[in-house]
Figure 1 (cartoon, rainbow, N blue to C red):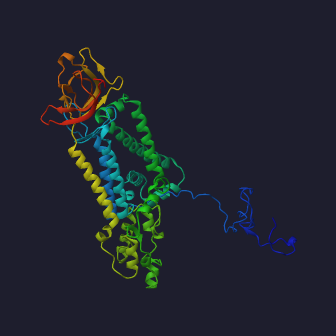
Figure 2 (figure 1 turned 120 degrees about the horizontal axis):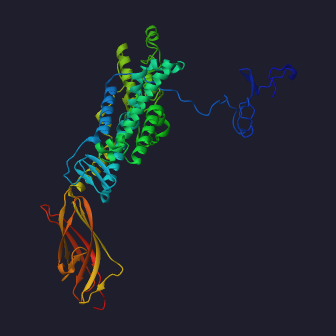
Figure 3 (figure 1 turned 90 degrees about the horizontal axis):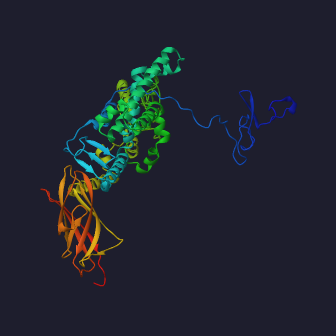
Length: 527
């Protein structure tokens, strides 16, 4: 490579060579497949135009976000949501609910051993998993509704990543001080004072992570018992493993990665664009009002030449993800609206109207820029799509409530034997065998009557009831909250033909719940 100003070149300048920082760099095409990574060249593929700059790194390193303390209506609402959600998570396993002596008294319990899910007065059995599926569908549609109506409000206020990140940021302020103090501490050399301060803060991180992981495992067993066994070293290994994994993930994601989870790992910011349009409420910077930016002194010297934005960067300093909302909608904005609180305070201090940064739709922004009045918020929310989401959500919720209200606590399952399908007894009668499963979904033992319908002359007995006691009906006791398997035998007199009939199960209590199952009685064809 030649020097563009080398006299040996006969005074001819090679314009394909430039000198930057004392290094010669070429604009000529050099294949990236053969060029050395350290080559001092603006290398590019032959079919590409020359590059204006030399890329030094493939990605931008993370800039630590130290958001500033702020007070305002959105910050106070964020405080409220964080306290309520954390209280629900940590306190719920300790709540009690009396279900009688035969059922656990924990209000919310996922009983994997017995395959039950308890939620206050509701008990979900494995065959009723459609209730859980319905709740998950409602949660998804509710998320669609919130996003369509008010953007990423879920991300900004109630998402677990946001809640725990907010909690860890408050720990940062408590230990290290507000934004400027934390910036100075980050830039300071590692002294014993800094080491001790970091160790103290990270110890609080670890305690928060352990409490979070410990609270999670309490949902799967009796909370007081598991709590005692956990610290006594008598809990199951899976309890310690689960608590350790959740402690590590809580500290890592909420304490250290923070906004990187929202920007790089979470798929929801990519999905939300399909759920929003120009009628969705967003946290928006009104550039027609704020631009061009200028300090307060400049605006006073040259009235009318500058917008309302004084370029104080308070909106950037309070943002938990470190974005500049003035650059427009972006994937890092979680719609927490803290920038609105910061900007409104500045506008109040300098005597200008609030709302330079505000919740607004793109349609309203265009209307305001043209000098028209914006629509009231309630009209913005009454978008046909939002109403459709609400109706679907309500319909699913209503269907679940109806199914929950009409369900019975008695259930019968019948499985006939297929090999052999029937047996001829010594007296000429025909016998079929069946496996019955009697489900008692009450938290108390119940006697249940098994009866045969539409099978004339039939009698029934079981593996615990002798044939001498056979009768058209039999009574069986089913333990509380259990499924009892009964081996049943049905016999009819000689000459019976193959036909359909029914087993009817009736609870012998004040509820008199019944369940009927049709099945088949097989008999020889030549009778």
